[in-house]
Image (cartoon, rainbow, N blue to C red; front, side):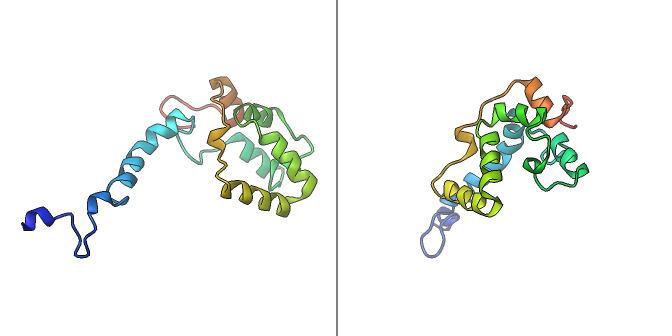
Length: 136
């Protein structure tokens, strides 16, 4: 009988239903492949957009005189609300825009619902060229 209770807690929970034992490890194991499939083989690699903003001492690309630049326009083909959302941020200010985004998130809005799988050349223009081995 003790062998049958290996995954049963004293209070009667079954450990096999715990996300920490089932769902989370499976999703964590699938994450590297999913990131490659989504065009993010190396999360946080040097992204040209980020480098450009830092060189110009900007917190956000929407603060740039050149907004939207060709890289932002390329990224906008993947995330179709990007440029409109940035114009909204410019119009209402960062604090109000952040509140609006939090309200969107609470309603369950996620970019994955509106994101397009852009062509590799478009992703390269937005994010920089990624070598086949997953490094930039």
